[in-house]
Length: 356
Image (tube, rainbow, N blue to C red; front, side, top):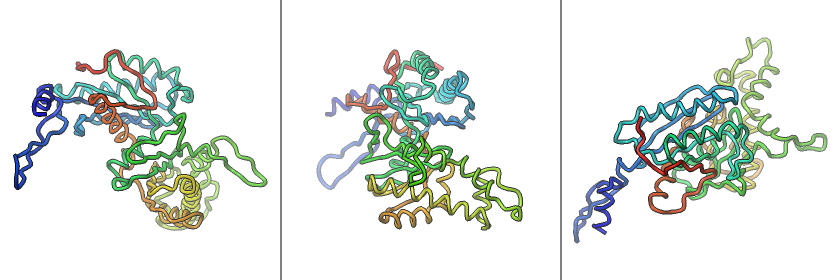
């Protein structure tokens, strides 16, 4: 064992982390992953922002970059991804540039067949280019799945074994984590609650993606503007402004309360199907603490009480989850274990020194 650990230390893969002295027996040295063992990158490639984090496999955060994302699904949108990765690596010291893996989180269903991702014809050439430049595996994962993983390891779900993360923002979705592992479903679509049948009654027929259309932030703002009374001044121009006005009461508070009840209806459906230990609510709209009480009461009224809390990681959850996934994948590869991914694009060479 000593010879094996010495060899790992010589290759820069492990380093001493401390000394244990017991009442009897020899003093033991504890080891952890070495800072020089490698670097990973996680990117939240969202609809409005691109947020990237470079982290050592040992968990040290080394660099962070956040840029505005080009709105259109065109070549320049994916070129912005390449620029962000290059910018991250430029901020990393030379001894930390042994890149092991890159994880890119996207607001779409990610399947191994890559058959349900819009704009894949534009993204694939970019993945080829990044793979040739850096020679590392590139993983694609759903953004809500990454946020769920981050909350499990670093946020509100740290002490829970079976949690779901519910994102309510521009889009809606759920990430499911069981004992630290993502549950993705058969084709990567687990948690796509935006596709639930809605509306559903004697007089209405469900339409595709209507849950997302109804609960998304754009529809919330439209309903607020349509219902806004003239005696309360100008209507809000953003959901952030709507939540600020809700603190003063009036129509804004009523609209927010109604929206929280709608989120509670959706959460109750998830509870009835999955029976989680905990629900973490996040996203641009969902992370507002004012929603939580009404969501809890709605869930309890429709099914049974469940612990429901706000996200602790807020807008950083997805990028933190992506970099955590990159660390787990890289460690599994180093240990010769099976490393699963929703979609994996292998680079020309699994790991090499990146000269930036």
